[in-house]
Length: 199
Image (tube, rainbow, N blue to C red; front, side, top):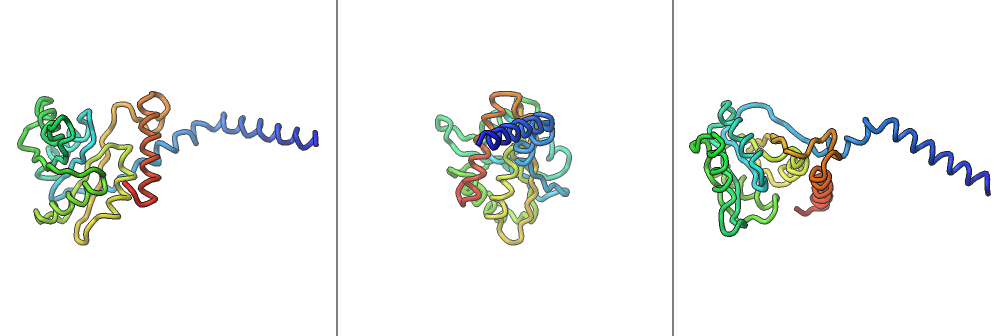
């Protein structure tokens, strides 16, 4: 009995040593797994998903349009913000930070989930005759977005996903800041829910 307990303690100690030595390899994995991109080239239009409160998504979208990847950026957003449309607020923010208003077009909706938002956006893309679109979202949101795109993408529409950088979330060292740790936790929770058929 004592011998068995000693073996268990030694095995646990050895495992802790191995994990401590190799943490640079395995610790980043929960963060880097959230990343996904299938960017291939130019598109008929660009779509910036709602949900970014710091302006990184719309700035990335503006840079892609300016670089010639798409002629226009469709800015998604609902009116949860004291009755103001997030799409309009985001465009005003980008203009204040040096972007041309002509790069953007608001897409106002009442979606309450990424699933529902994508369904509305894809319907709008087809209505405009777009065959290929670039979808811009936050880097930590790209894996789940890719999953939801596969669930909702209509036939005949090619969707490329681009991840905008985030102020706090650095995938290779997600543990460095409280906001980054929170982002990882909540995004993994939503990813699990998406795998189960929600969000």
